[in-house]
Image 1 (spheres, helix red, strand yellow):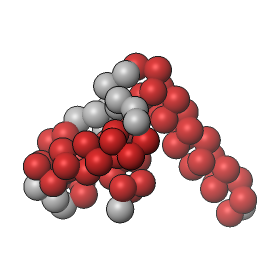
Image 2 (cartoon, one colour; image 1 turned 90 degrees about the vertical axis):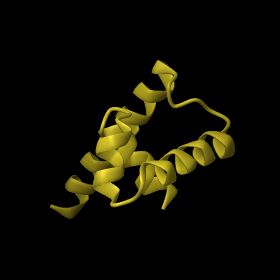
Image 3 (cartoon, helix red, strand yellow; image 1 turned 180 degrees about the horizontal axis):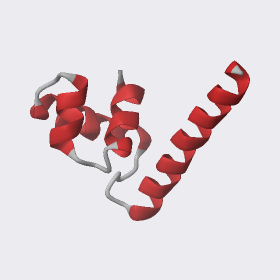
Image 4 (tube, one colour; image 1 turned 180 degrees about the vertical axis):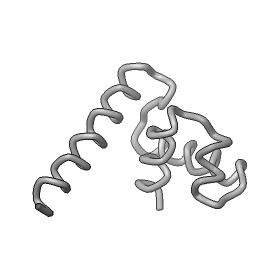
Length: 70
């Protein structure tokens, strides 16, 4: 649940409204999950370096999945 939330949030460029709609959850639920992620991993998703690293990581994961599925 948290990984899916994080991936969606990063792919939507930290837009809470779009992410909440995409996940079919209330915005407050999304904010709770984001807070939980930041607390568990001791990071700030608003940090540009963290955001960039996560974006690249998710892109690489999708690319690897496509390669292995072909």
